[in-house]
Length: 421
Ligand SMILES: *Cc1c(COP(=O)(O)O)cnc(C)c1O
Image (cartoon, rainbow, N blue to C red; front, side):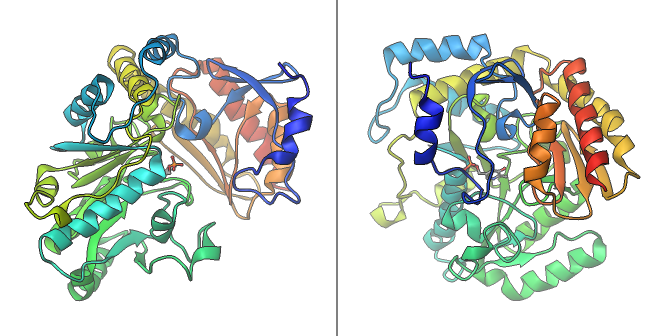
C-alpha cells in the first residue's frame, strides 16, 4: 500500500460536477461500513445520501459481499453477445416478477444513463419498426433529470439544467412543465393533439424529480400524463433509477401511483449500491415490434460489460435483502423521522420549503447554496450531505439507526440555520 496515494494521485483526477479551478479537494476515503464513510484521518461520516441514492442497504452488507465474492471466484465477467449466464437470467426473471407493470424483457447495461439511452432507442425504433415515420422526438419535463450522456441530457431540461452548455448541441425535445391541475392537463392534451405525430415517448421520473431539483408531484398528475401518452400513441418511459426499490415508500413509484409504464429504467439501488448496473424493462407489446425476418428491426445495442455477472449477482443479493429485511417499514419510519427532524427548518430565514415523501427529505432555500462553504460545516458535524442548487436533501440508507438519522437532521437544521444569514 502506498501511503501517499492521495497527494500523488489527486493531480491526475478529474472530479464530477465541479469547477476544478476552485473546487475544494475531494476528501480521502479509505473504507465504508454500515451507514458510514471512513476518512483517511479516521473520522467517520454518517452518509445522508446513500452514495447518490444507491447504498440502500448500507455499505458492505455481508450478504451482498459474500455472494459477489463467490461469483468473483467463478466468473467475474464474460461477454453477453451469444452467451448467457445464471446471474443475468435469474435477475431478469426476478425483475419482471416485481416490475410495476406486466413487463416481458430486460435489457441490461452499465449505468442509469445507459439504461435511459437504451429506453430512448427502443422507443424511437418501436415506432420506426411499426412504420410510424416521424416519431423522432421526446416529451419531457422541466426540472427533470435522466443522466449525463447526450441522449439523456436532451431530455433533462437542457435550457435550465446543469447541462445548459450543451443546449444547442443536443437533440431538440418537447420540454414542458409538469401539469399541476386539470386545466394544465388539457393544455398538454392540446399540445399533444398538435405534436404527437412527431413524438415517440414521454419520459418521466415518477413522483419525485431528483437531480433536477428534488420536486414532487402527485399520483394523479402521474396518472394524467400516463393517460395522455396512451391517448396520443406515445410510449410511457418511467425512469425509476432514483425512485425504485422503496425510496418513495412503495417498491416502485409507478406501482405506488397505480400507473403502468411501457418501459422502465432501473439503476442506482439496483445492486444495493455495490457495482454499476442499469436495466431497461419493456412490455411484450414493445418487444414484439422488434421481431421480424428483417435484420433492420433488431435492437442494435450491446455494451461490452452488459449484464456483468458480478453486478447481476450483487443485484440478486440486493433483491434477497428486499425480500428478507423490512425495507418497507424502514422507509416508512425514515419518512416520519425526516418529517419531524426537518420540519423545524420551515420558517428559518432563507428557507422556502420543507418536503418529505418516502425516505426523501428536502429543505429548499431561496437562493443557490454556496456548496463550498457548506460542506465543511456538515463534515465538522460528522455527516456526509451534498447540497446542490438551492436544495439540501437527505436520502439515507434504509438501515440507518434513529440516532444516526437524528444526527443527520440535526446537522441540516444547524447548517441551514447558519446559512440563512
Ligand atoms: C442518477 C440518475 C440517472 C443516471 O444514472 P447514472 O448511473 O448516474 O448514469 C438517470 N435517471 C435518474 C432519475 C437518476 O436519478
